[in-house]
Amino acid sequence: MKKIFLGILIFLSFSAFFFGNIINIKNGENIQDFIDRAESGDIIYLNNGNYIGNISVNKPLRIIGSSKENVIISADSFEIYNTDDVIIENITLTSDGTAMNIIDAGIFINNIDINTKYNGISVFTYNNNVSINNVKINGTKELSGKTYLIKGYGIKVMNYTDVYIQNSHFSAFSNAIIAFSDNGSDINIIGNEFSDNVNSILLSGNMTSNVFNNSFLLSLNNSILLGGNQQVNILGNIFYDNAYAVFLADQNCGCTNKEFSGSVYGNNNFIYKGKKSNNVLKDLFSN
Image (tube, rainbow, N blue to C red; front, side, top):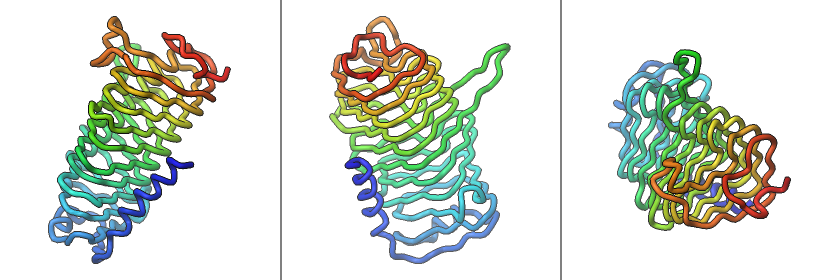
């Protein structure tokens, strides 16, 4: 409950900023033209339609669609950089590469779908609030011979600040969420659904990782893969038919950039089919 409250506070802190003009954009118009002319604090409102073209945002704006089912943006590049107080809501984004890049930007993303042939969202921040809520990110399963090839990531975080990823769904990625940090920041992964990924979550570095109330289905290798000297809190998760629920990287696995040397705490996790862990983790699982 505390984590959800913190997420709401982040959203309210963003929302309180917006007091500018509402700029209406019609089907097929160039979004970037309107962004370039907008003032800080303006609201870019996208009416039902299909929008094609790259997007670059470096000022506080709210970009909101009429509904994610009816606002489709096709872009090779969607970049938010060197700013705070950006909100993106109610759109569907399609991409053949990395769908969205967030670089030194504070952002709240809510209620969007991403369909990508490779990567979803890349986050590289030093001192900005990042909150990602109610996002559905779908990768691509490509048939190669008699097997399917799964690649890319859903969200990659290279962060030096706190990040919240909540109430979202990830499917068909090599790593659905991958996060690295060496400065003791927090990553909070709460209430998400993972299905048909190779590794659902890969966390490595010197940080605090909170993995609460998620569900994991059919992770081909690991639901949660851990490396580095981090403190990890794993509570209230459900694991169904995954190869490993929790895997601690060692010198032999070659699966992260660092061997795990931290600590794992948790309880009230349930596993149905699949292995619990490659290490003995007392009290982590309730069955």
